[in-house]
Length: 451
Ligand code: ZN
Image (cartoon, rainbow, N blue to C red; front, top):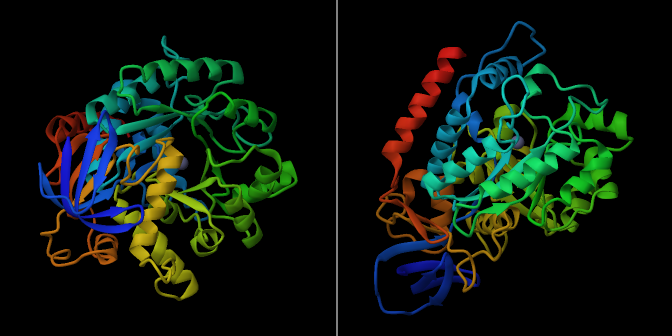
C-alpha cells in the first residue's frame, strides 16, 4: 500500500508531498517531495495508542452522576452501578462493548488500544471453564474492530493493603500468583488469531490489590509492557503510607524495577520531588485526563513532568467519553487552571498542540509495546488523516493544525485511520460501525434492564 499526503508530521518536523509505503503493518518508505501516487490525503499524522482502558465501563457512561444518601460519599452511585454491572455482565456483553469502545477509539484518532483487563471470572468468583475466557473476548473484539490490541491481564489479589479478602464486587477480579500465571498464559494464547501487531503485557492492579512481594515476580511474567495504577487519590496515598511506610511513588521508586517498559497510570498525587525522580526512570506516565476529571482525582503535574524529560501516554480509562483531542485539551487546560497560565505545555520550538501530540505518540507506542513510533521506516503503520476541509482546519498548516484539532475541534476532524496498516476508518466512520453498534445496543439493553 502506498499513501500520499500534501502535508505530514515526520519525526524531524512537517514535510510536504509525502509518499508513505506500508507493508505487513509497517512503514517501508517515507519520501517527502514525492509526486502524488495512489490515494491522496491532505494531512497525515502518526496515530497515538490509547494507553489505558477498562472497556466494559463504557456502558456506565453518564449513569453515575448523582449523590447517594451519605453526603461524604460522592462515589456512591458510581460504585453501586459498577457492582450491579459486575453481578450481571456476561462474556458476550464484554465482547460487544469492547468492540464498540475500540471502534470509537479508532474514530477518535487512536491507532491502537491497551486494555487493562481485570474482569476475569464468573459473577460468583468461580473461573470460567476456560480460565482466560474474558481475555479471549477482548481479543475477539479486536478481531472485529481491527484496532491493534495490547492485552494486559490484571493481577488482583486483595481488597486492600491489609490483605483483606475481596469484597463481593471484586470477586470476578481475583487470582493468586499461581493461577494468575496460568491465566496470563491463556491470554497470550487467545491473541494467537490476531494480526502480528497484537501484544501481551501484564498489569498489576495497584499497590492496594497485590502483595508487595509479588509485584516484581508478576511483572517478570511478561517481556511486554508492565502497567500499574499509581498515586491516583489522596486516600490511596494515605493508605499506602500507613501500610508500607512510604508514599506510593516513593515506595515504587525504592522497590520496583521501574524502566521504560513500565507505564504508571494516573500519578495525579505526586510531590515535585517524586515527579522529577519518576520521570528520570524513563517509565511512562499513563494519563487519563477526562476520567481523572470525572472522578475528581486531581491534576497531574505535566509542566514539571515534561520539564524533567518524562514520557507520557494518553488513555480513556473509564471511557465515559472517548476523544483523543479532548483528553489532550483537558491535560493542558488543567495545567492552565492550576497555574493561571496559557500555553502551559508549549515550548519555544513547538506549539501546545504539537508538543502534546508528539508526546502522546512516543509515549503511547512505548506503553503499548508497539516498537518504534512516528512516520519513519520500520515503525508500526498507525496513521491518522485529518479532514482538512473541516471549517476549523481549512487553510491551516503545521503546528496550528494540531492546535486546532485539540482546542477547536476533535473527533469530527478525523477522516481516516490505519492501525498497523489496516484501514478501519474512512470518511470519519469505522468500516464496521453498523454491526458493532447493533451488538453494543443489545449488550447495554440487557445490562441497563438489570441495573
Ligand atoms: Zn484504570
